[in-house]
Length: 361
Image (cartoon, rainbow, N blue to C red; front, side, top):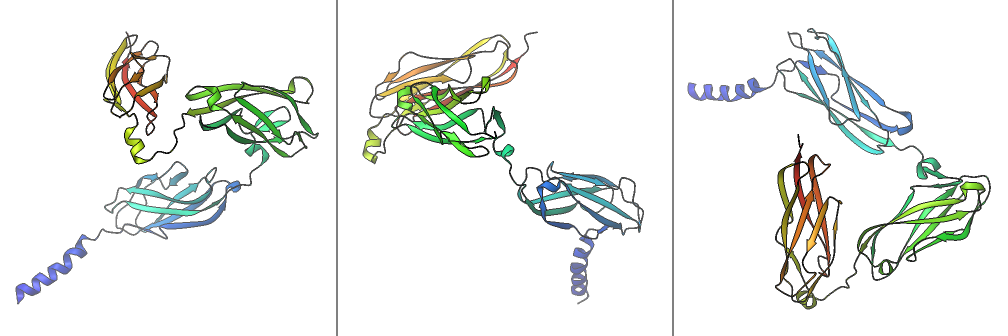
């Protein structure tokens, strides 16, 4: 019986002994800012605590969970019975919506690490014309100096609209004069844009007529009725051209060509600056129809791809030789070769070469 009582007392006492000793008692360990406005700037809250232990305690560090939260705290030792603080400053700039952040507190005491929390909701600042159209060209405001068409396909022209804004106090008329490649068409709506109003520039890109694959950059110029040198507006047009393959039934896909790579990454390791190093990737047609490699494109002029042939019969393979010239380069390098083919399921594939380029001296 005595053994049983001893066991029961011990089983109750051990968890109590294992409890961490509370040395710093905070008035609160979580603060809800509620709704704060982005335009009002940083929001602050001070967590106050009391040293309830019998020894001085020093806060050695307070680590915020993100750079948007800047902590400050009592630096000197906090004596028994005395108080200290930890201040959290949250910067809502460009951070609309809800937030949950932590402050991890380390001390010289015996207690476990303390985690303080802040949360709230940031009300975004009202957007201005300057926010939406930061680029100014004469009286015309636009978002960027280029029009990005994104991914376009060869089966049909792609049309995309780009908003613009007339910041002038007079109507702005787009003249019927556009300099653009034959596969790019430019239209305006409205042709005469009232002052302090928004319109749009409409770009149509004919990828089939462009007759190429991959990322493309072109230049266009159009004119307004503004006086002097303000009339000319020069822009870039970007597009990622992809070959279009119509949907296939399962039996059609089984008969299609298929491009298979022996490997997709090769690491040259350490290479002396100025050296040209080469490796080989094997390309094999594991499909049931002839495979045609439409194009290879390097991410850098320092990397060259060579193919002995571009059409592979079923079961046939070819070497893709990739040479990386390290001249003028140093440190960790990573270059890629993009392969475009008539493989309808994976028409765009990529191989990568890496190297750690060491100084020549």
